[in-house]
Length: 545
Image (cartoon, rainbow, N blue to C red; front, side, top):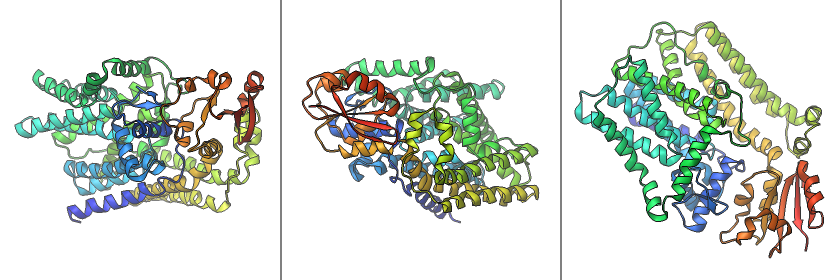
């Protein structure tokens, strides 16, 4: 297959996978709706420098990803498809980049395995059909590390040597503009661990560190510098303060146990997470191969350790690990295919065990959906959950077939592994995983969403375009902003819950709470509020008068 045809094949298949049903499901609270709303508010206000939410400064993130969403919304309108489109494009770009790097590092066969493993691993596949920042953030960090490895392994080629250094700084700087300074921290810590792995070799002249740092600084000044010049230090100072706070404190609703990220990566990165350990002879590696492999191992360790230390536990935080895991898994599979590596018994068992767990999940979802009364006793102490499962969701038993087929693929691949038909076994398992993710995202997720938030979003959409106030009570959400399409220039008092509840409001005012909070709301404000509806655990109110 010629070079152009290989890239074209990957791009077409990736587009089919990642564009399919992209806007079918409403955006999910918090992150998807948060980011889409910030992009929408940029369009509404024309302020593209400062990120906002509810037309107030939102200093948690830099603006680059929101600019991507703005571009998509300008073309396709303010909707779910446009909010998720940047990551679908990132999915295509990532697979093409992995193929190109894999081909340069080893050969086209290795590159195809790397692409297939990354596309066939659950969480990476899911993220490319989401509206969150991390896919682009991770790709830019990965490129920063990749070019740093090339820089260190090509010091004798002076021109390319400097080119790789510049590209490493460039992509690291772009990563900072995408999500924040943790990008530089990941690259630098990975470099430090690389030096340790390389027996303290890998140090360079101080001038190269200064050049790299200067490039990173210049790139980030595209936003930080202009923001400071236009509005002073306040916004940037709040942004940096927030980044520091994330490391020191646990965000509300985002705690977790110590090994949270290890468990997430093990289960969510099936099957690649079980293939990263390679036994027997290693691949034939030159200096560049060795350096890149060490960087991948170093960056994997850095992410898992760093975000184990960080008190806030969010699944996105360990998402960069998907890239080194994909490379290490591809190295294992390629080595097995070429009989220079082998799988251990525990890896085969792990693939079977986790494969069965995922199969049970895929089968159980439609089974329970058709028999929702089965789980009600388990939810009896949670009134909101009980309300959720009262949603009218159309399940049928035919939806169990994909789970049964996935289970069959897991079992057949295990048999083939035992028969040493490793290439066929891994290929079948990866194709089954790709198919399973398409089923999950196109058939199951829309139904699951109807239990979780759909009633609230329907309520917001019923108010879309109307001149009203809308506020949640007792819980945090961004959905009311995006799905009612609130306009800027609201009265200052309209952002004050107490004023909306008791003040002299000048337009129809609506509230929404979970049913667990209804008693408290009505005990305090029964004279001011009428309940205008209840649905699936949510209660809807309107100000009297």
